[in-house]
Image (cartoon, rainbow, N blue to C red):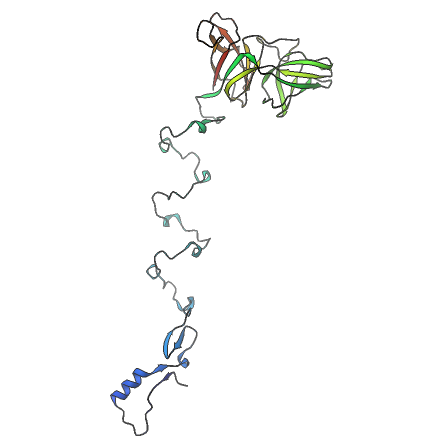
Length: 327
């Protein structure tokens, strides 16, 4: 079984010459008998590597080097998901603009002042409550209100032989600890006293409770006495008030000009905050104007009882009352 085919056959009396030998060598072709395995094949008498004939079995370990791989030909699919390429193998320098970094990839406390461009923090980034133990010296709440205009919120109340009074008023905006002036009108039983109450609990956006000084079963209407807000931040409402109110009231009271309660939407860190304020009875900064300040101490970190007075130290109902809370 021959491995090659030749084009010349010597006879018994043939003379061997160099020409005949050279022709035999030049014209010899390979046969399939010369092939073992599947790596090579014969095509038209020529020996060649079979298509897909070279596999990993024919390659020595470490025989394929980077110079044998064409530049730009390795695609993502060729890299195993568990390759875990070490960071030391990645080049340094600026990241491409298409790469995004999630906040979870930034180590807490590593962004320094030098990493922030001047004026890079815009107003929307400062919106909302500030928290934490680090000092924040800025306005935590503010309001510009018209004490000569009312924006009362009407609702209903019920009390079932206990001191707990349930108030239903759509979108009341209150949190537990806020102070509100409530005007009750009885439907049945004996109404709670009109006056300033502390919000004991908030059930939902439309319902909250207060604690009264009496416990007679009663139902009826309840009006939250409020002043008109012209603009605000972290102030849910400006409630009417009286000077140094008894909470809960033990007798009926009426709102007093110059006395108001600024209720915070989000509580302050503590009661140790400061108030700055001004007011104007007629919209000008003339003799009728004055200032807004604390009426004693804030009752809690949820609200502040404030008073508006003119230059004669008389309590007034300002057309424009403005306060800022710092803490």
